Length: 220
Image (cartoon, rainbow, N blue to C red; front, side, top):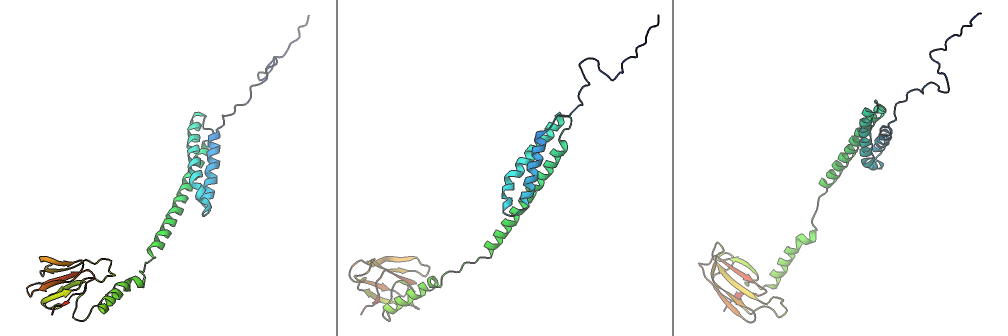
């Protein structure tokens, strides 16, 4: 009796309903992809003047996502590491561009402020001169209004009298104060709120100060 020989099944074939295992696919890394895309958009926007202001918000987000993507790639057999590193580079470049724009804007603003000068109105500068001219016009010759005078050169020693301030004066209080050459007071100042007053200026006095709206004239 002749026995038939059956050839063995090939080694790479799997009997029964089970087929060969599927090919190995590394795990995906969504953080790396997202970080790269966001950082790329931020770097492009940073190149556009004025519009690139939004890159101040986009670039940090892309940079953080890319850093997280690098950490995830270390736990997933390096999946997405290249995109994550590229995202980090783009995020840093975008931030540098933003800082350059900010520095240029600050320099331009500082230059414009430095070149701006202020000139006071001419009317305010001439106001004291006009006021002094008006006062000298209303004070009779040989009489003295409000001010400080040097005894001997600007005012002669002697006795001076005032009739008081005009009725229209808002501050009717008037005072005559004798002073030394250094401005130190001598005696008690002569004052009047209503009516005449007298002051005697001595040759030893250094200064005489009149305050108020009164006019002081030599007493006869």
